[in-house]
Figure (tube, helix red, strand yellow):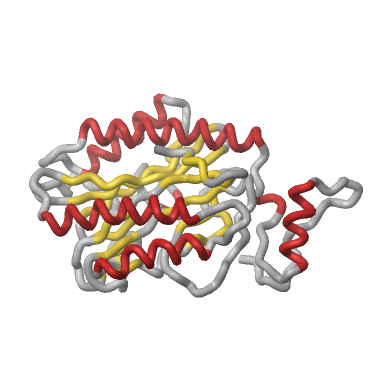
Length: 285
């Protein structure tokens, strides 16, 4: 990520600076961290990401209609894989740095990156995060949802609901010409008084032309402004909220599954957002 003293916004030689260029350059000259010009998506790119988002949403909608007790997480994965392929797209997770499945299925104390399995069944009272990333014509969209199976304990249900609210609050705090740090500050202000902790080892991220781009979007108060939010930027907000401590570990056997240190439940919701002139537009639902 760029530091405040780096000149990351560079107008190509021979190009007349736009009004947006001049505004970002003004922030840069004052020492603020600004995005690179390449992080500002063109209208054509935004439409491509939006199309990927429609398919990504459809895959999660299918999961919502189908998910039930006694279902295996591998069955969820097959639904997602088939839906994405049937819509002429690619499941970005499959093969990404060796990940073996088309989506992530993270149950109860698993924070994220759970690997779908035929042996892993959903039971009454479980909560599960299903995380899907879709590539359509080279453009990426990324989102996840929580699902509650049967009779979920009231305090766990509240965790799921409050985590969704954290996502909404983070999005409300993100304004054009504000800063990435505003997002985590707002989320922590809401979550901490309720007794929750926020995972610090994982974050949201830029997305669109690649799976992971700048900026890094922390979900806790870093006490820094972070990168300037400029219209045309696309990124995820995906708070991971724990009922217990914020510490996590990665399962040594599979090298992927992230679990809460105290094995208490965790919840996560995620959307891909576009910064507009007036706020954020959700590109996934």
